[in-house]
Image 1 (cartoon, rainbow, N blue to C red):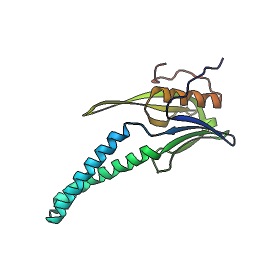
Image 2: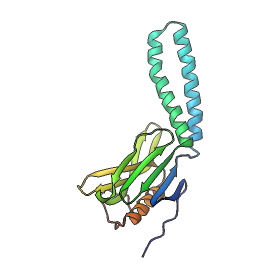
Image 3: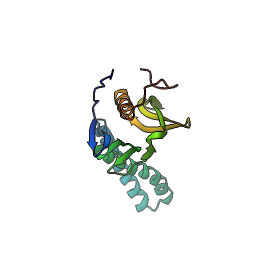
Image 4: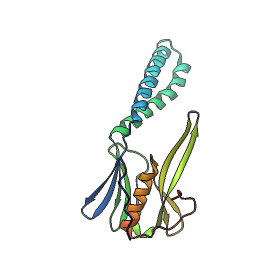
Length: 183
């Protein structure tokens, strides 16, 4: 008997010439806070660098350049959050993960015959502002290696849906894996 798993927010399914694709939009309303923060951060850094360079304070400018680089990375992340998508594609030969249109780390391609199981994991990160929980989808390879497929998923529903659909397409039985997200 097949289990029906509802389609979570920010996910869609596409069928393209024998390829099954789960497409995830990166956008979430939380990005608006990051945009505000990035504007504040980079505005402050413009003032900082202007003062440092106009007064010939090279040490102050060098110190500020580290923070300015962080600000530029934050802007890149904000733009990517608005426009990027991730495609998890499965065809008879490969499972691939591709982030686009802006380049991002984590693109990969795996031969489907090397995958024995998929599972989800919860990832908890602690910082000075509290705790952040995200979800990941992993593959167990036929050589016993663990391969992270996706990370940064905002809900367990997204991770479980992706796991379920790929297992279904590949004909994999859903087996328990040590350390996986509790069902």
